[in-house]
Length: 121
View (tube, rainbow, N blue to C red):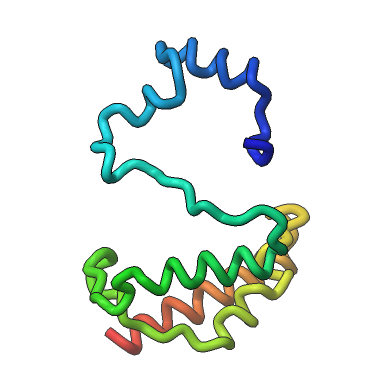
């Protein structure tokens, strides 16, 4: 597979370290009907065309069912303002954690969040 970043020698070394003789050995505990299969994508497709094909496959999944992982946080709405605020550079570009002007923004955000949680609960 040309999109795997390691060479054949590296793959063989990894298998040797794991005590396996082939990549198929990695999947021997998985029943055949549950093993990964190829999507049989035709060659020469653009990224957009491949995306559309995979989107069509994904639409066959039962995505309308409720997922109980997360303890009740599965049906929720995240306002677009959250991403806009969380992606502001002053929250994630700490050039040093000891700069008070940087820490102040992070401390203010934590204070506001904790205050809102207190009001909600």
